[in-house]
Image 1 (spheres, rainbow, N blue to C red):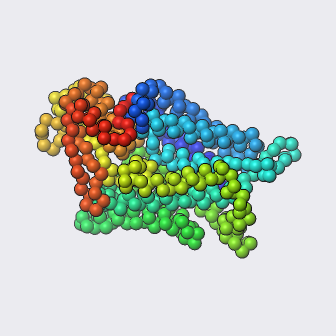
Image 2 (cartoon, rainbow, N blue to C red):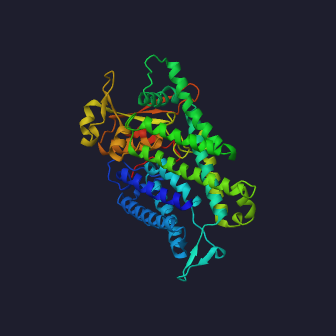
Image 3 (spheres, one colour):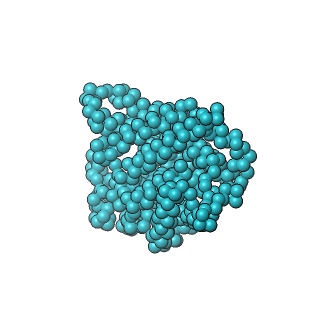
Amino acid sequence: MRNQLRLLRDVSALILIACTWRLWFAASDIPAVPFFKFLSAVPRMVDPVLSGLLVAVLLVDAFLAAERCLRGGAFVRSLRIEQGCDLLFVVMAICLILLNQHCLQPWMYHFLILAPLLWLKFSKSELTVEEAGRDKTLESAQDQTFARTSILWLTSSVYIWSAWSKIDASFLQTHGPKFVGAICDAVGISTRFWTDRTWQVAASFLPAGELLVGVAMLFRRSRSFALWCSLAMHLLLIVAVGPWGLNHRAGVLLWNGFFIVQNIVLLRTFHDAVAAGASTGLPGSENCLKRTAGQAGSGTQFRLSVALLAGAVLLPALRSVGCCDTWPAWAVYASSPARVLMQVREDSVEQLPESLQQFVEPRPFNDGWSWLRIDLWSLAATGTPIYPEDRFQLGVARAVAHEANLRDDIRIIHEEESDRWTGNREHSEIVGESAMDEVAKRFLLNSLPR
């Protein structure tokens, strides 16, 4: 199982990086905003080098994982290479994320957490000798159990925290009805006579179903049911955001496809484990844990993996106190995060680069200002949504103002996070570069572009 999931992770990461390559190889004009101010001096040419190494590592690991899947085992030397690939993958990805907050895509964060959970281990007691005289290692039962259980817990936390972020008035008023409408249109359900109340009630079923699947996945008796429901949930989401619905970017579809394949593998191994346990009178995982009690938990590597898993599962709770970003809290498709909306004086639009002028939109009433849709700019330039944090979006606005020499011809509307129960937001207007610099001082993390 672990080899299959490693191969799935590697191939998925390679495809997603290919779909969003402009982001990773600094080939777009979207500014890069690092997490820490001292990194603002790092030249952009570093990013393509790091991304190239990341792709190379994933290619090598995918080849070894595929070979291991076909053969059922691996030579010790190959395992050491795979461990090195894991370490390099984590280091390269973290460096890219630190240099550009935009690189903290939810799927990349997900794959980073999976790395220690899919770590391949071997010990002297596990080594066997082939006829050719080479050492070969087979994955132990306790490692299989730990990997399966930990990935189930991680997947469950993704669903639960994602659902929690959508139990929100703003979601039921904005994104939720859009998803429901796309699904209904795709399956031929008429919504012509629906009232606003009907739309909101229908939208509430989305987080309710996601929460049900996440909670059911935690319990052995309901796990099979939850995994089957998760497949239906992801298929519906693909319908909603795919070419038949809202026509979102390919990355969204691919990440959902990853979950579908991953959950199929987990479902199959879960049934195999239950069947194996039935022959001895114990559930598969319980039987395995009983036989290996005191072994799996004895190593530093195991304890570190458990600590990282616990941190990833609990980290989203800090979002409610402003200590965790939106995507690491699995608040995907949430409409509540704070945001920055950008405006430019109409007589200064020509100062913008030509690549940006196509994203200028007039306002319903003429007060001398026009919208500059940096969210659409991000989608067009990188193939990814803009990082949903106001400090990053402020950094983008500061870079545009400096590049186009706008000075006082730029205005941003800073909207605070919406109220969970009413959907209302507090907002403020900031005019000019100097005023934006003052606002940037309020953030703990950096908003200065490279």
